[in-house]
Image (cartoon, rainbow, N blue to C red; front, side):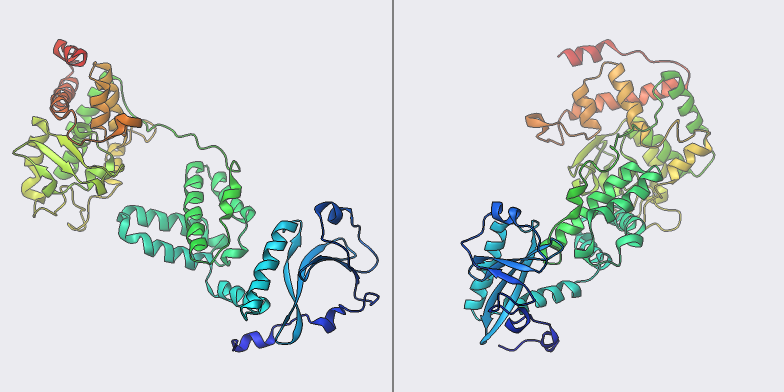
Length: 441
């Protein structure tokens, strides 16, 4: 068998190093007795000189004067007596040591030197790359199945929060305390939710490294309960009818581009997630049938979603269609810099700030809460509301039908558009009797 040149320089412990046949040597004393037991191992105390406790099959426990205990195995390979390091007791138990001994003996029987093979595996891990390199490889592998936004966020979160501290370290050098130290820096900045997200991403990187043979385990599993609990906060939203009216009046008087004004108004009418609204394309809009069909890959829950259009929404879409409709793949709300990109995620948020609303009062995502609260307060069926918000129902009821309650939701969204108009004009619209009847039916 021919081994790589770098293995020729590996130090090997041979019989001359350890004086196996000289029990009284200055190296250590050998105690040949029956097979070991955990009780016997624990009972052995350190001595002035190192000694070994034999277990059979070449396996023995080396006990040093300082009390450390190391599992080793002696064997013959190519007519030379050699030593193979198995691990430290008690981290490697007696049972595990015997398993590793049997595996090494099997390798010898097949003409493989276990010591040399261990060095090859160690060298392979060394060449496998750093946490940074493995992470970039993992990100590249997942790019095709992730949205551009999620891929970018994942990369930036790992790059900014973990690369500066463990990015250059080998995968098998990174321990749970090192990862925790980096995550604690995030906690100190008050981004507890982000710390939990970064921990989850790191776990996926380590699992990928384990699967590809470049790490033995995922150390983030040892961090259960080590971070501050993540208590999700609801998005700031306006739910008081009078304040909703003031908000809609402010939006109606918005002094900006017509595209941003329409985006603000449809944010309230559609109650979509901000990203789902920004990435709408004209090919998904059927004005003739008053319906928007959003494919699953653009939805957070990865399910197709149908959105009925109220008459007010159709009018708004027709207002900007001549300005942005350049074909099925063109964005309804394109970026001001490039029509090939959607509107910036900060545009609507910045517009609310310009209208005088702070981030503690109202955010784009808050329109969903505004709609949900108002619809429920006005006796609309909760199932219709949840379906309109594209929430997932657990259990058997969670079986998804994108057209479920479509007619009911169409009536509900027309009511919602009329309700917003009346609040804007200073008149509160009470819940209609037929709405209550629909729910009871």
